[in-house]
Each structure stands twice: as C-alpha cells, then as structure tokens.
Length: 331
Image (cartoon, rainbow, N blue to C red; front, side, top):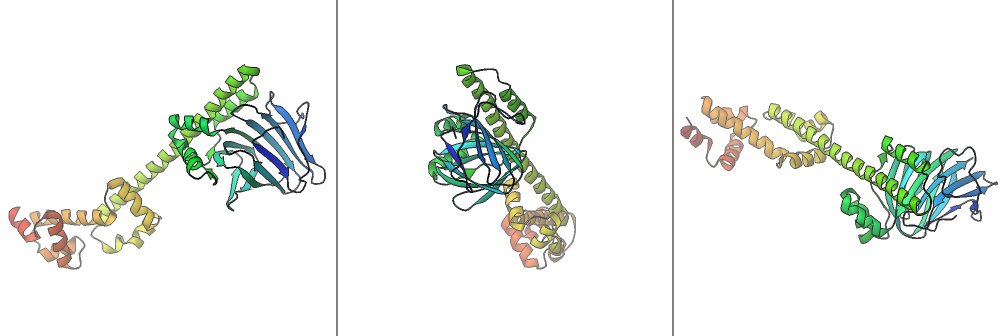
C-alpha cells in the first residue's frame, strides 16, 4: 500500500498487494475525497480492503474499509514506531500485540495507542469493518503533551519502554467527532492549504480525546468520593455494632472489595476505616462521660468495645488521659 508507516498483508494470501484505483466505489460509505486510493483484494478468500490515505507529511492519515466473507486474519507490519489514533466507524477489530496481549476495538469507540516497530496480528470477522486513523511522530507527541497532560502516558512509555505497545483508555465517538469527520470529508482545500486544514481537524480530534479522558477520570473520582461519603455515613450510624462494620459486612453492604474500599476511603479522608471507627467511638465516649453517669465499662460496651481495657487504651492514646480523668476535668 502507499503509506510507509504500516504494511498490511492477508495472512491467507500474503502475496496479494494493494493496487491503486482511479476512483472510489459507489458504495463507499466513508471517504477522504482528496486521498490516494488503493485496493487489496483476494478472490480466493473473498476479502478486500479499500484504503484511502494521505501520506508524505507528519500526520499520516488513512481510512480503511474492509469486507470479509469469513473470519480473516491480517498481519500489520509497523515500519516505524508511532502513536496511532484509531476510530472504529463500523465492525469490531480484534488484535494481538507481540507480547501475547489480546485486545479489541468495537464500533463507536476509539483509542490512542503506541505501537513500536514490529508485526501485529489483526482478525476481522464478517462482513464489514471501517477504521479511520492517523499517526503522530514522537516530536509532535511531545509538543501535544505540553498542552494535554492526559496524553503524557504515551510519551512516557515511548521513551522508557520503547519496545512495548501501550494504549490509553478507549472513548466513545460523540457529536463533536462525527462533525469533525464530516468536515474532513468535505474539506475543499488542496495542496499546502489542505495540509493546514487537516492539522486543524486532527488537533480538534486530539483535543476532544484529551477532554474525554479528563472527564473519565473526574467521573471516577466523583464516584469514589460519593462512595466514601456513603461509607462514612454508614460508619457514623453503626460504629458501635461490631458485626455491622466488619470487612465482610462492609463488602456486602457496598458491593465492593475490602481493599478497594479501604483505599478510596483513605484517599478521601486521609484516615483508614479502622482509624475513623476508633475516632467515632472515642468521640461518643467523651460525650457519654460528660453527659451521663454510666460506668466506664458501660460506656465502653455502648460505643462498641467488648473489653473495657481496649476502650481505655484507645481513649488514652487519642485524648492523652484516661476516661476517668477526662470525666473529672469535664464534669
């Protein structure tokens, strides 16, 4: 095919080559009207890949439309390490990385992925698949990370682990992206003006991806914060009931693993769940010492301690004096 960064071969027909076309087929759903056109077709497997592309500049851009009668294995050879932004406009793309990892990109989703130089296996089911993508060199990626911190992971992995593929989280295609695709499709520019116009459109796609990644992280943070508040409210109500605040009881109540719950609670409040329970018990004990005539043992039991000595030790540790001394000073 015409692009230098990637070479595509049908594994069942490795000698089949992309051949240039003068015009697009009439049934071509998506198109880059200003791009070069080529077709890889194999009659034996009834597989065909139509490629439209713009190469010869730093943002190699391409659109692939694949038709497969049966499940079709493909070999992708990446001739130069690059970061690719890949948009699944139709179908599902199953792929394996050289380290054996299995991944997929399904219709309506897109992803940014760093692929080092090497061979990759891609499997297409039937019948139709459409993939839009563009690639970036290292220098331009570094420039982007100065504006979009969300992309820094790609540059870091490229620099520190250059032989290992790496992908950022996938995001959904939305109205902004589809409108940008429409503008690319109808772009009237040519020559040097085309170069500038495409840079604007692709920059808009990169900006939208960085924004969606930030929104995903914010959404996760908000979700964790909400869970932490619910856990805190539950502990406030049940701190004195040992059977209701065990790790097993909390996991059943909130349907989340004990490890994950403890981590997000400490991130939100700066204290462990156990430490928070102890603080609630001591504060409740202080209130009872000042407002009731209950014995120390009765207060210990009321705030959730089976053994009075355990309550006294904790109280001394947190307040700096024993419960009896505290009562005398605050009577």
